[in-house]
Structure formats: C-alpha cells, structure tokens
Image 1 (cartoon, helix red, strand yellow):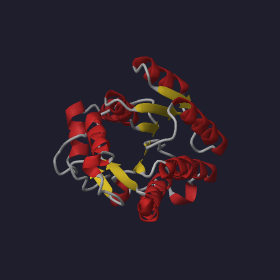
Image 2 (image 1 turned 180 degrees about the vertical axis):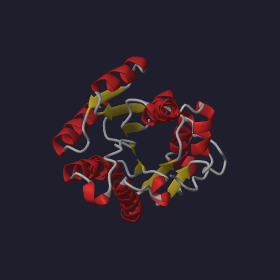
Image 3 (image 1 turned 60 degrees about the vertical axis):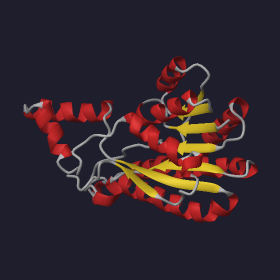
Image 4 (image 1 turned 90 degrees about the horizontal axis):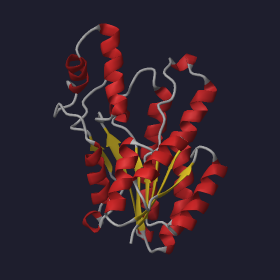
Length: 252
C-alpha cells in the first residue's frame, strides 16, 4: 500500500491528486496553510488525514511529519503542490520580506518536506517525489520575479535530487502546469470581464491563444500524470521536467 503526502492539497490540483491516491487505496495525508480548506477536504474524504501547515516554517514541517508518521507511517510518495503567487512589482520595488516569503514557501518549503521525506523513502528501498513548478519559468512574466525565481529553483532542486537519489531507488520529477480550469482562473477571467465589459469567452480566449492546443488543463489530468509517474508504469522516469499545459507558448 502506498503512503502518500500531498502538500497544498486543500483544494484544486492538490486535492484532486490526494483524492486520486485515496481512491486507489493509498493511505493519504494532506497539508495546507488554510485550516478551513483542510477541514473541507477531510470531511469529503473519510480515511484521509491532514495537517494545517505553513511549509515555509521549519517547526511546522517538523510537526507535519510527526502527524504523517502517526497517521500513514513512512512515506513512499511525496507530492509537493504547495505554492504562492508572491508580489507583483518591478524588481526595484519588490518588498524584500515578500521576496523572502515567496522563496520560503515555494522553494524552501519543498526542500524542507523533501529533507524529511527522503530518509523514509530510503528506508523503504525507494519511492517517488513529484514537485510542482510552472510553465511560466519557460516564458517569464514581467513583474513576477519572486514567483518565477522560486519555481525555477524548484526545477533545479528536482533535477539535482534525481541524480543524487537515483542510486537509492528514489525518482524525482517536476510538473509544469499551464492554464488550470479551476476557480482561480475563472476568478481572474471574471475580474477582467468586470474591468473591461468584454465577454467571459473573449477574455478566456486571450489567455488560450498562446496555448498550442487552445485548452485549459483539468484537475483530473494532473492526477492522471502524477498517478502515472509514481506508478510502476513510470518507474524509469526521473529527473524530468514535464509540462502538462497543451504547450504554453507565451504569456503576457
């Protein structure tokens, strides 16, 4: 039986992945910084356990892993979905505390969970780690330096860890989401509708015109990919940076 931790699983992509593993019979623990989101996910998924955790705070990650051991035991799979958008500002105007917070959650938070999970995976003779980055590392986004820098760091951490941990049977991959069909994307589109008076479809098409397949990615499709690369069918896949996006060509 797989024993899985999914971070950032209070809703959207993380929740869909956690629910997929639970449906497949795994023991699943989740965490999220939002207590209400954790409570809602656990209420909808009997048998799943969870913690309210800021992964950028080392003491909270220690407490998270104490909960993991108590509820699911030593992990076989770690999925790091957690992330924050960070500030939007010109380089010279970025608040340094906000820079530190974004790096702390998006990059250091993944390192903290990996550091604590790896001894478990080694004790089990191997396992799988999946870290979520973003297709925006390929395109860049002006005024979003903390977010892009942190996610580029996730990709470096992933590739280096795959080389280091491969001899221990631990596979490490990263997934780069494109435009996700979730509440956040719908909120962004609606905000532009309200500001411009244009139709929802017109605004949405402005985003999709830079996606080769002109598509959004469904939550279930991320669960499909994570299920595959952590399964025996994906046992030779490691060190890969995998876009699940329909080919994100550019962003404005």
